[in-house]
Length: 221
Image (cartoon, rainbow, N blue to C red; front, side):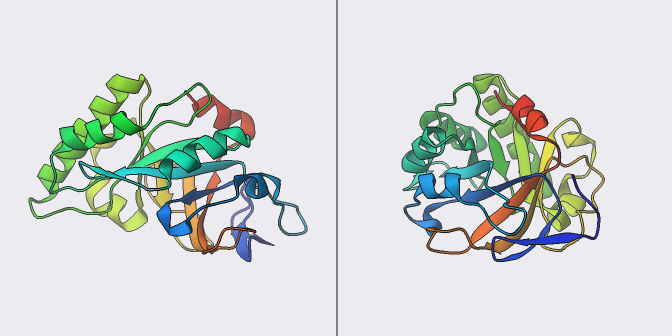
């Protein structure tokens, strides 16, 4: 579990002291050897990669070119997988939900779907909130599981910390050695985008899960 203020050396950087580490990837990492990722251990504590979130879709029509490959290979190599959608607030939210649902076929053991929200858009905060609530509701209705919301700490504090999103679990991006200071019970923390994993060509975003492996598995569909 976390030991606030303490770090370990692994994945090419200093990392916070948690039991469960994972990565998130998209086309920018190109083709990944997931067997190597599954076997990879780093640092004197031999930390490994337990879970991976892979980008699926963006907006109303974009499909990440490596999603199908990443989705199948993570499952094949026993990495707990999740899929995320990058939300575009200037685009119809129902069409965005349809794009995600069309391409992501979830199975037992998969993490809940994730909405990645980092932009307010030209129509303003109220419209952005209305749209993401619609996306969340449509996706929950389809998969039968409440989605997770990904955002950075400052965006959360400015736009998402109100009552509208109480009850949702959050994955917070916060690139420091100290835990995110947000008034929500986050379950994932993206602590760096500078990770080095063997046989992944570019640096990769690193994450921790707040709880134990059993608690991580309890989140899964």
